[in-house]
Image 1 (cartoon, helix red, strand yellow):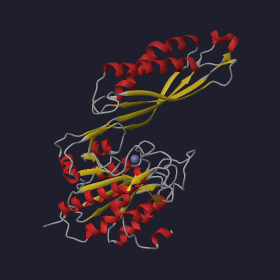
Image 2 (cartoon, rainbow, N blue to C red; image 1 turned 180 degrees about the vertical axis):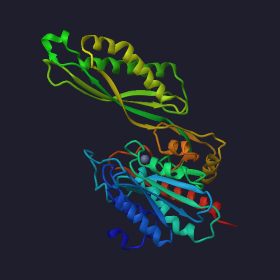
Image 3 (cartoon, rainbow, N blue to C red; image 1 turned 45 degrees about the vertical axis):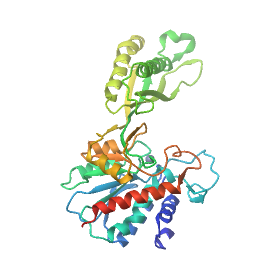
Image 4 (tube, rainbow, N blue to C red; image 1 turned 90 degrees about the vertical axis):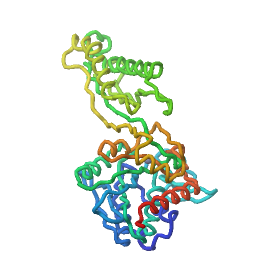
Length: 391
Ligand SMILES: [Zn+2]
């Protein structure tokens, strides 16, 4: 790749190289990881790849400094969301620097954080290091935080793993100690086909699905009206949402099949599996009996799609205090979007979310990051370096 030909000079240079790899989640990220691996190797840092089953994508893990003790992990995902159908003014995979901003897919979410960490690595390595920094870069975050799970599994079994994880998702460098979780499910409804003039002998899958979707809407209203509430989150309650529904083939056929996808975006303390169980109970007690009475073999099946656990870290936790000291801010926040932080936390690695850029720009056409955010993130990392150097 031509990216490796010339040495990287600064954060913006590194961000430009990373943006140039089209790592939309459906694509391989291996070219980008090879570039990162070669860059680290030039600095004398070994890195390891933790691949997916197909060997087409990988997480990268590397330790800067001594490998015989825990350290602090800087974590980010290398994949980006698609630009399909979006109206971009410039090539999304070529950084366009104008108006004190960098435009490009992944500038805010979240290649800038990764780029800054990498660009500043030589500076960190130039001194004696007492506390190592780990780089943990993942794949397939945007499609359900799928990739990082393999890395967390690998780390969880090791005697030495990070004692704290900073996830550089775009928070405008605010310290985020809690976020919602998300449980996504696909539901397939099997009915029984019949000519629509004989609807009494058919089982209408679309109508059965609609009853379940209506029940979900009722659950959504209940959470909106009755809570539980956490006023630091927006909205302050668990949300329930059906996103897709497909069913039926023609108006004069009682539809045999219908499928819909729904999600619970839950407060960290809410149990989404209990919510799913509530729906299943409603289906089996109130919808399926009538279906079965007409035709056995009809009914509902639920397929898990993904679960991203919520994050909930105490304000006085060490990782939160560290991030607050590095940002110089004395407040913390909570956000509604999911990140890999809850997975790290469940893997025994306390985590906090703090990174440059704004989530408002993420996933949109003409995504950008303010240059000032890059400067703030550099200052944050340099303060971290000071704490990690010996003496
Ligand atoms: Zn992200």
